[in-house]
Amino acid sequence: MRLAVWLSLAAFGAAAQAPSLDRTPADGASWKAVYFHDEDNSTLRFADVKASSTNCAVAFGSMHEVKSGGVRGVAVRSVDGGARWETVPLAEVPRSGFLLAGGLGWAVTASGLWRSKDCAKSWEKISAQEGLLRAHFLDENRGFAAGLAKQALETHDSGKSWTKLASLGEITSDAERSFFQWLAFAGKFGMIVGAHEPRRPADSAGRRRQLPSLLLTLQTIDGGETWKGASASVLGQVTRVRLALDGTGLTVVEFRDAFDWPAEVYRLDPRGNAMTRVFREADRAVKDAIIASDGTSYLAAIEPPGRDWRLAAAGKVRIVRSRDQMHWQETRVDYRAVAGAVSLAEVPGGPVLVATDSGMILRLTQE
Image (cartoon, rainbow, N blue to C red; front, top):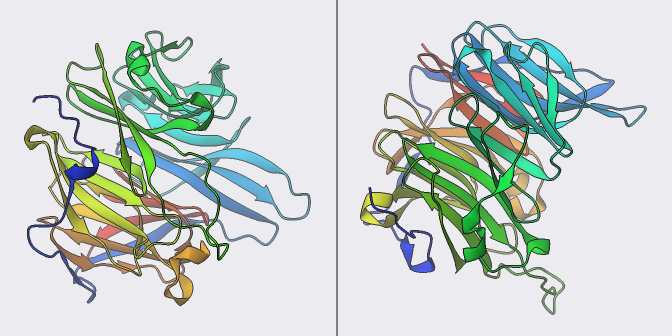
């Protein structure tokens, strides 16, 4: 696979054929709530969900106390493929998490990194590296992290110590308004994605217009031994890159200011240096995407109330699926699933999971 600087503005190509959405829910597939925090005195907001096996799935979140206003971190874990869940308190609020086989996992917080060796049942703080947003580990010791202040880091000791990637010097944006927020690997091909957001005034009507921002990318084709940096001016912000084993993938681009669409999804083909738009709907604010091991693609979106996604309000969770990434169909989702953000994960050898920022975990069931 050759290294492709695929995220240039020209790379965002229109679809060769118009993508379609069948809004009739698919037969035989539904998303059922397997965990729901429905309490009067507190709310639970999941920020991430991961699964490394049928014996370990973890949703990472924060518990917000209504009366006191206090916030504490929690991990909600399952060791039976997502059927039953147990809540474990965390000393700090997690921003994201990562799991490897054997129950090994990490939780990323604003002030450091925590590690678990028993599928989130117990935790130890191993790093005080501040400003991290996400981490990705190739094995027990070798990993990478992305964060605020233009942080793109690597570790060789399970996250205890971190060093900057040398290729950061190839990206000249200022650190104050630059960040990396997503990591993805498929074999030896890997990506770290972020953005630089320049200061900009509102337009004459006082409404923020969707203006270009600077997309930041780091790519490797040798398992992280060397990286190549690049930047490009684009509309919107790349918030997800999900890679399949063959290196192809799905990329979610979200628009957060005045624009015709809340989000677009592109099919990524690094080998052909191509991106093709495969989904966009005015009433589907896509938040995450995943390509399951059987080849089925899923998009998790929010349908904004009043069909106006610019209100940034919670809406009904909508999940669509496709076998060819062009023809999409709605699936049935628990009617109580209302959220502002969602995360997807596949249990290896098991179902796909969805965690919401409204304290719900959904599991795909085939009926």
